[in-house]
Length: 256
Image 1 (cartoon, helix red, strand yellow):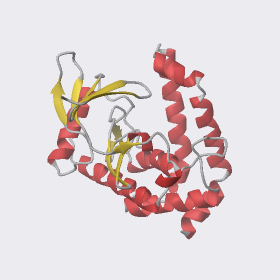
Image 2: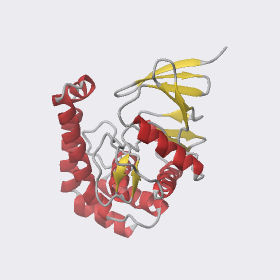
Image 3: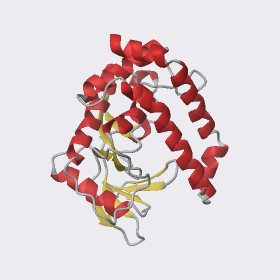
């Protein structure tokens, strides 16, 4: 019997049948499929591979074996997971450098300059496949878009360091500890991103807030619900937290 599972994400309902995942499409799907095929062809296998579409018009993607966690529970707050997530993101970015965008490509988020790489757009623990305590893949490329490396790393460290205030239920660590984890992430990521990522986090979160409000204003029920649930309020609080502790975070980063 073919194994079947259903998962409800923040926006989409996803179904797994055996080793194939069925997901709703978006206007960005054709470009995303080209992107996913490109990175696989260039040796990056930490992402699903496109397999076309089913009879209902859903996209088909290969299943990545491992576990996905909504939050970084204490057993996931390890140096090994942090560094492996950074290395995984670096590999993704490097594989996208030679990706050729087309004039008709549609992306969920606007292109952000300098468009050095293709950003995952939502590199967080809830889109990270973990196996034996290590990050082995990223899923859900719906938010992929061209942008600078630091833009994508900023959201990743917001989630993985994390750069969140004590009122955020997912937060842990003091500002000094968080700054050291940002430094560890950036060391594992490699050249191209440094302490400036801390200053990028508030702008990255503000862009997300603006996007969510725009989508809600256009009638997107999922984002309307996110706003009602207080997601934008939480992001705004975390923006204030990062700005308030900026000097401590950067000092810890530089000293790490």
